[in-house]
Image (cartoon, rainbow, N blue to C red; front, side, top):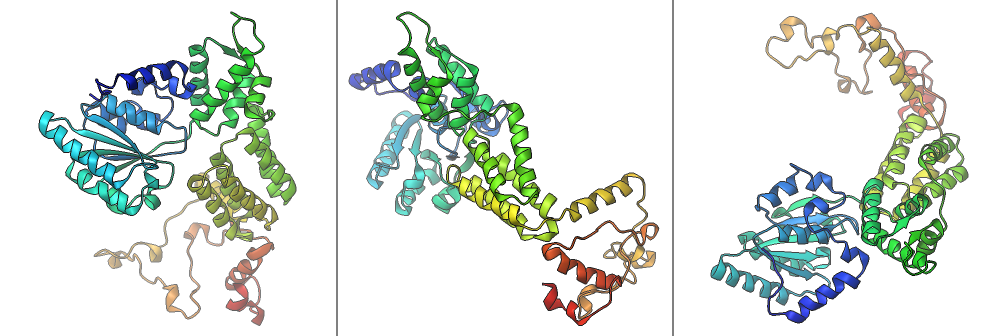
Length: 451
């Protein structure tokens, strides 16, 4: 079991003092894995990381997640539950010499007492390639169980050989429920109270960062305490929360969540970039989940813009990826770009409406059999059944298209897709209509004009 050095009395005394007067985030560190707020997908009953810890069979791991999600806390609790010695280092100050000294000590510890070593390396992404390479021998042999913590994408920041010898566990930003639970625990510990709107403001503005929430709450408690008489229960109000954050609260309740996102999407659909940016700013300022906003943009790119500007879906997907890769506050710039692009793009819901029409037919039983020439003809005996026979391969034609029936016989001639004349869709649909024989074949409808 990991323990403090018995002969370092001064260090032990300092730790005891900090436990009573240190920052709230340190004073409220969980004492076991069950007390960790959030990360149930890793630490819940039967989840992978929890199972490895409970069985004391942990191998090297990388903990990747935003600030304030519990990476350091989880690493310490893993060590506490382990039979191994816990050695913490920070990649900001550690050197290759430090790594070699840790490895040498681990070798002696294992030989003398049969005790393994857990090396916790905080901010591992700050280690250079050569420094990370120094870890490889110990990790590869099992002499060191590495727990690396990083806020950056480890696939870019951690050497592939080290990644291949470690299991990656991704931590998520704390959601509203977890943050409220953490704040309530802090108030109970401090024998204090708070108005709901004050807590909501603190939770909304911390961006899923539990440490930031507790730091802000500590300031709010100090502001509230300055108004109290001695012996009176400290009560945090919205004014205290605003003072702690240096920002006024934006009213954003459960109804606002749905109303504002509705106004946001309708502004994009209505091609009003100014209004769309306003609602985006409202959501971001109120602490709305950036991933939720990004998901709505991806949906709007197909639901409202669709074939009029197919590139919009790529823009929206890129913004969603930026939210995951870059994170807030910088990712708000990517969200703004995607919002403006989608608002300015030509609009078409023809693909969506076509799906609705086709689904209605299927639901009503209008299905029919797969035409024989479209059936799988790759197995022995298929041709004797007529499967795949008479199928015309479009690529065999110089134009890349041949005239043949693709719908079931019962639905031949059915039309679900009704293209608009907006943006790119007009050019794409013109080629389609020309092939169907709906319009003549003028020279203007060449492949060059269709792209």
